[in-house]
Amino acid sequence: MDELNCNTVRDLLPSFDEELLHTSVRAAVTEHLTNCPACVAALNAHRSRMRTAQLIGRERDKKFCKSAAKTRAYWKNFIIAFILSLIGTLVAAFFILPLLCAVF
Image 1 (tube, rainbow, N blue to C red):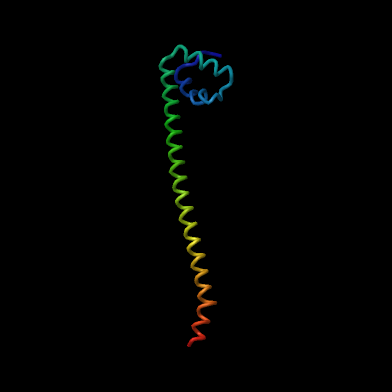
Image 2 (image 1 turned 135 degrees about the vertical axis):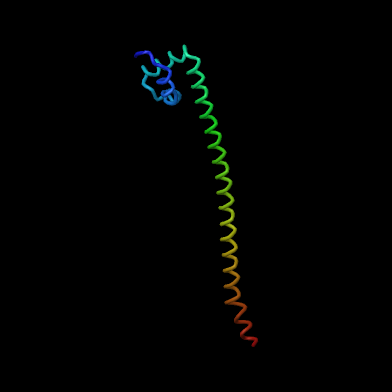
C-alpha cells in the first residue's frame, strides 16, 4: 500500500483503534505511526476522549439507575398505600357500617 499522509491517518485513527481496518491498511497506519509523533499524539488524544466519554456514560448510567430505583420505590410504596386504603375501605363498608346501621 502507498505511504499514508497525516490527514488520512488521522481520519483512520478511530477505526484503527477499534481494529476495524483491513490488515494492509492497518499495517500502513502502524508504519506511519512509528515515524510520526504528531499522529501518535492524535491517537493518544483520541483514546483519551474515548475514555472520558466512557466515564461520562458510566456516570449517566449510575445516575439513571439511582433515579429508576427511586421511581420504582415511589410506585411500590404508592401501590402498597393504595391497596391498604382499599382494604380499609372494604373493611369499613362490610363490617363497620352494618354494625352502625344496626345500632341506629
